[in-house]
Length: 478
Ligand code: DUC
Ligand code: ZN
Ligand code: ZN
Image: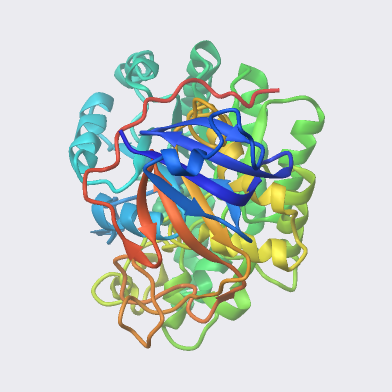
């Protein structure tokens, strides 16, 4: 077993920062030591297999991205990152655990959907992974199957109030599932948009000849996110289900979540980097078909209406608890292009799994959030929220040796896929939604369960390094 000592760095946690050395024995962190401590011998560095010098750098828990869609069949095509390419890209960006969404499609049994997801991921991942379960056909059989999810290490399920005819659950189905959530402790995750109302607006806009990507944002109006968020909160209130609202983009939806939390309800909100930085006007409204790069749901919101500023603020105040990516990449060629002349046929999704830590670190540099809050919203809270804490999301004895060494004096230029223009990303996409973003920091070294998988801008890991992680119930309930 390889022993590793990370020396001279600043260990940053959700609650503070300290000069400390971190000792990893094999896959597990065994000690966090005051610099110069002689507890484990006068020259610990000489007695370990590998010493990593982190002078001037932050030593942080590996990122936990709790919302990804690797190779998801969607919109007449499939998300372009496989578990192999997507988890490798995640590693490049300092994420060492993902929680992906296993899908039960309409007409399929829950455990058949889950088995298919295990088959896609097993032996292919660069980093550890868990699953949430999408319930795409909520019937008596599915409700019964949900009783067995926790034993499989799956402590959360996602419902959709959007996408009629695909993943949609009506209010009666939502109510039944939430009763099950209250009974079992499984976290209800909700895609909160009023799908039937959106479909009416889509039909009307297309009939008026409004076919550009911009109208995706018009059809998916903030009122329909606020309304669905409110409805989900009230159904959760009635049933006692813990509720986690995914990809919140509208400030009015944030207000609904904040009000429920103020009343003591177990309601949580997630946002994504795209809702913090990108907008309806500048991105979805880009000339021609360019805006298709940024078609995702919920949609990018208007900057003039102040959603982005409100979301940053809500991260400061904990009205929103964490940031995931909703990584769901599609290439322009052959995929996004399916929606030329009809925005409703553009596959929904943006690829960001590689950039979450960097983009949120820029929020630290820009004074939006503190250094500690950065660690909290990208690693510690996701681990607590989804029953991984102790193993993931923290640097402490007994935790997995999932560690990122982040250089605040480094620089990252986000650009086109590898070899494009000298700037790089590693996701399996023919473009970047983040092209041109400059980050005042850099992911230098990434360890996954004690193994160095990224070092000095080289990938040292292998396909299959990542293991399935069974999750427990949420450790974040109030
Ligand atoms: N939203 C997206 O943008 N993509 C995948 C599914 C979803 O809800
Ligand atoms: Zn969703
Ligand atoms: Zn999603």
